[in-house]
Length: 308
Ligand SMILES: Nc1ncnc2c1ncn2[C@@H]1O[C@H](COP(=O)(O)OP(=O)(O)O)[C@@H](O)[C@H]1O
Ligand SMILES: [Mg+2]
Image 1 (cartoon, rainbow, N blue to C red):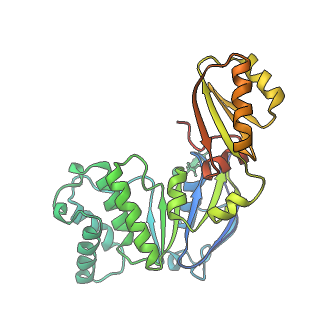
Image 2 (image 1 turned 120 degrees about the horizontal axis):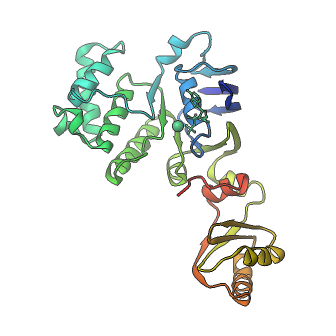
Image 3 (image 1 turned 135 degrees about the vertical axis):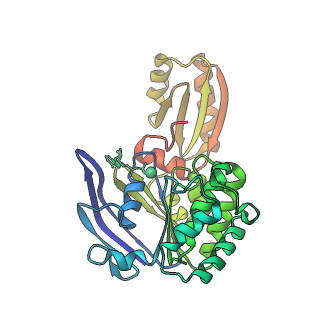
């Protein structure tokens, strides 16, 4: 349904995309997971014809995007990272405006607006001005407006950033429903929980490149992923750190916390704790980290997905 080959994009001197490729089958929910600045929005913007790439091929629903962008657009709904809504208009009038840009007969459009407002739990508030809406409600309207042309493909760029848990859950439910109905979805996020829950396949993106790709299970079992013991200390110094690093090669430090990677948590846990206590370290917290997308990202890049 979507074929992207060797996409490159440079802004002035910044190489935002350094050769991105992926294929997405019809009905798949594909997650682009990566930290801020990885290139997610640039990828979505190019696929939705808002930004031109420097290089690369894109085929959407059998249509070449570079030679036939208008035809491509007909198949696509886009939920941009930045909200595009008129605050002084009601939610209903916003949808009427955005929906009016599509080639949908008015009675049909009105029926679709009612339907999507119900889907997003905002039908009762449809005549209220958008400026009275919470961030989560605005986001729901933003997604609703992307669905009015009944697209085959939906691009969602970090749709849950900065919204309340209730709106987030509702958005998850809508994504799951659309996916069940056979819509092809590209969903970008820097929250691994979202990619794990919603996506059939995930591309991990960092620094303008996809560094790993597959189903969650494939990502977990590919490479030599290890589980980790994460210990926080009240008195960790550089000296402690190097003393431990002598014994434990597979180690990362974040401030007061050490990450010990191991293939055998059960067997290694007591050894690790003993070592720490022998050199006078005071433990404030111990966490056992099973393999998940966050740990996969960390092991591939040495970085956390999020700063917090
Ligand atoms: N219009 C632009 N002008 C200059 N640099 C940009 C522009 N858009 C994005 N970038 C840069 O490209 C890189 C990728 O950005 P982006 O695609 O927005 O990442 P993400 O959505 O994953 O956070 C970043 O370094 C960003 O600063
Ligand atoms: Mg972005």
